[in-house]
Length: 290
Image (cartoon, rainbow, N blue to C red; front, side, top):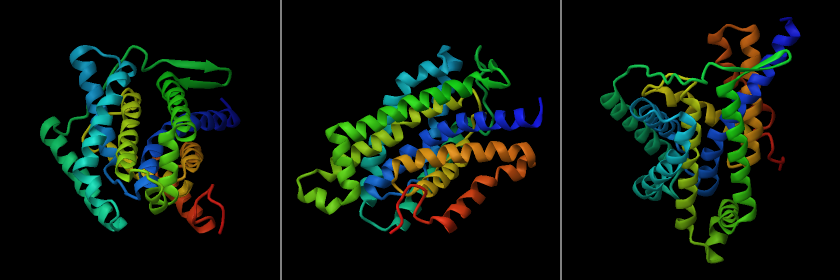
């Protein structure tokens, strides 16, 4: 494989990874856009979805992809509980308050997972997890391809929800002006509840798709929290399409960096990309300059 083939392989793999990053970040940006709540526990709820997928596979033989069908409503229920117990109480307060509270939630979830599941790395070995699809000079790992395809479908569904439904219209109205939305008769708490349910519910897709590719442990969600915030900030806070574009850009940049740089350094490249974006377009990639 020559250098151009390696670069092409890295770009394709980066696009696949970026699609999954975008899916994780879209749930986070939806919650911020509607409620202005900064959820630093986002990755830890992803970790819970991964544990649920692992135990469904190890105890009952449920394939990770099949787990999506029960994990989505379960994570939606978790989102409803999160809203009622935490989010509702910090809405309208400063972003520092939401950061402090959700960091506390993240640490609580991590330590409960450590107590319950220990620190062992758990692995899901499915029949198809090590398969690859050959496409000329490019080889696609089947789990990455499945994850990317599912991410595209769910992102399209979320776009349709936001663009063509009454709930989506109300979410966009609240995102643009909570006060104006309230004056027009929109129930802010109902819309915020559904934004949290959907935002956490998306992790019911991302968690099962990630499980065949990664070790499952109590701290696995932290890296995705950080990555999601890089994407959300780079794409523009609360910007749906910005999160998608930034997710793909981060995925490709990360993989290309891995071609030429050591793994320890390439992992820091997305954060360097964030610095560049903040210096060049601090409002985000797809947000017009004022």
